[in-house]
Image (cartoon, rainbow, N blue to C red; front, side, top):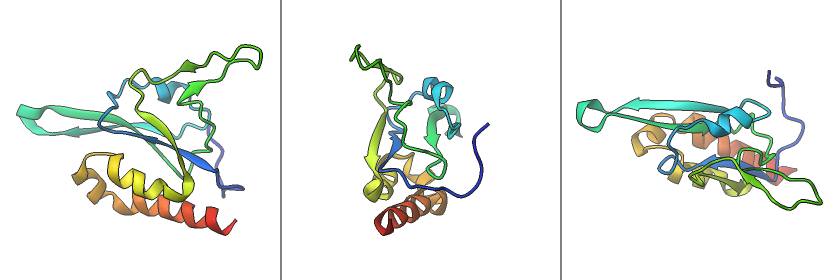
Length: 131
């Protein structure tokens, strides 16, 4: 279970999933050590079907990069990629709000959830700048 409570330190980078590239395979969800990734679904009607992608709760993300790649030993530089679609990128906390607004989900979803998604990212950027 993920640790609850106020954040002690704001990470230098946070993970952001490009919703257009994400297929919702949940491989990142399985490896996240803080359980900050959830599967999102939008029913777009009969013609377009259901769109799904994974989303990162930025308030809980610790910037560990495990959702991007599983680190190898120091003696073995090979990194095992987690996302087969390269949909996850580590973004500097200072610009994460802009990136989430652009690639964090379908435009109508971003608009409906603006405060939770972009607002939270902006608050984290401000905390990071003040640290």
